[in-house]
Length: 254
Image (tube, rainbow, N blue to C red; front, side, top):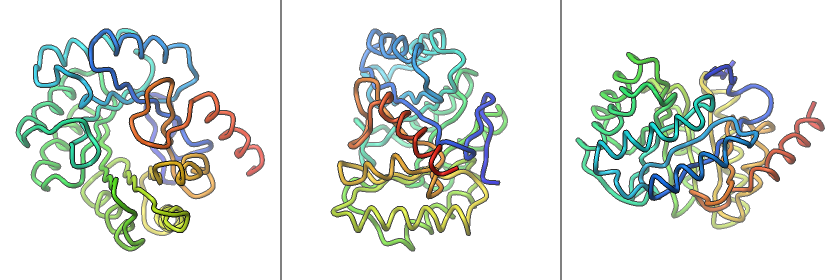
């Protein structure tokens, strides 16, 4: 059925679920962003820890996570450290990346961990095994901020994500024109209908790709990313507008 349930939220059924990133560089900014999310109709929050200035200091990271969880304990939380090569704010070593993710899993305060497919399989498996023992779900993701790969390559990478044991697979690509957006949507449909048994998250970034963030229910993308203030990737839509459009498409599509 291509679905996954996290804290009673069924990913892959009905409307695409809306996730809002927390991109604060300080604990004070993260606190403010979490407070703003508390009163919104958001399904998931994602802490983009690569934005956090003190991400190299384990105590500060744990303190920041505790602060976020204290404010929005009932909103499922995705933990993500996005590497620089995939659009993140900074780079860390492979060992630090593994230790950081394992520390977040140990906290008991995150529900999903985003792991990049660009890491070697040993790193991926180490984090996944650790996550599964603690009943934390994993997203295996890939991001291309330069261009949109051929459809076969996009399909192959998402199939690989499922074979590696992902609970969700995610691909984000940059279009150079509207044909690239259609290519991403075509790959999404093929993956959803023919290849995957896990929920899929896809998006075409930038202004050209906004349509892909709105039409997930039609093509098979289960989560879309919106904003309250700061965006974590180009083309993200303010959450109020995003919810209205998703609900309108849902009514028409039914």
